[in-house]
Length: 299
Length: 206
Ligand code: HEM
Ligand code: SF4
Ligand code: SF4
Image (spheres, chains in turn red, orange):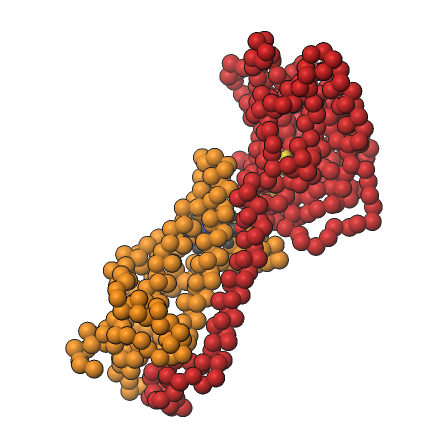
């Protein structure tokens, strides 16, 4: 749910400009995958703060539990066992909304105000306006939003916009026992990330780097990855995410084209009628019609 | 009225047509509301935006089924022949109100419109089912749903533009609406617009 004390930058299905005057700083949440121990304290904190209770599942043979995001699980830890440079690595990634600068969910949403992007970078869903069409699910390049089976509305991580609005860090950040999740201005987070990346590089992770994908204009959930060259290793984090071409076309060029087509059809009919006039055959039902006008251009 | 009339559509056909037409209008209203942010208020026709979203696909299925019935009624009347090609090539002349060719039950334009509608409704049904939440969409991969949404919106807009032409043609050629309301057309109408069909129906030589 959006917080009214945060300024809005963009609003779904709203072509006019958002309020411009105030300019809060951009924030970001930095997830340092190399420090995470997979304890899931963040999952619990999220569930507690947001009062969510995913159904108790069963062990599927790996640590992932719940196994996927849902309307009751806005963040989940994903565990991947991969072999890199001949060594087994256990890569653990906290999955959830990336808070894109160019959010595909917001672009796809047909409902005015059901999705907003706050000026600080948080992308937030407004469930009371949501109509449950699921367009956001298709629009998101990270496969994040989930429809609730109970109310049909879309849910996802809102970076605790209610907490951030009053100057607190997100619940997951507050809880993380290792400091793997940090929170602050995006600028600061990039600086912190740079020192972490330098450290990892010095320890032999030559491809360590920051994940802040430019294809979606950058994100407000950032990852420090030991293998930034292969983000797919981390349970399928997309390498170069962007809004899909189909969605861009659907929400872009199609609109003016469609408008043109419909307007052309309507205007053609109107002007044809007032220039050529009706095509009559029933002389006796139209006392005023002349038998010989049918074929003539009377314009 | 003293006109001599010919039956063109029986009651079942007319009911069938108007079921499709009413469904189409409801679908176009709700669909355009989802497609154009500026028309989102049209969802109010259905009570609330969410109701419009829920109702739309069900109305779509009703329309598709009713249209399917029309398809099996009329497809064999809509096979193109040489006369239709001639008609299409001289469409400019037709627009001026001058009939071209020895037209049977349907002219080239009507036949083309029929096949455009068939294509659009088939595409809308297929893509609409794929995008249908919460029932079916979850069974399809997200890239497929994206294509479906693009196809759905494109074919919907193509169909809406076509229907505008369809409705206009019925208004322009006076006496045509009566065929779908009362089921009959006058001899003069048939003789002028569909001479071959007129001869078939009356056994008269023109
Ligand atoms: C044939 C059966 C049809 C089915 C199963 C169907 C289903 C759907 C579904 C599932 C959606 C997404 C919104 C929602 O869940 O309500 C949708 C949107 C839409 N439908 Fe349909 N529909 C059908 C026919 C039609 C027809 C005949 C039209 C045109 C008059 C139409 C026009 C639209 C439009 C314009 C949208 C919005 C697309 C967008 O947001 O860009 N639909 N339809
Ligand atoms: S990750 Fe998906 S849900 Fe989150 S802001 Fe980006 S597009 Fe929207
Ligand atoms: S499900 Fe809700 S939030 Fe998602 S696109 Fe539809 S209206 Fe917008």
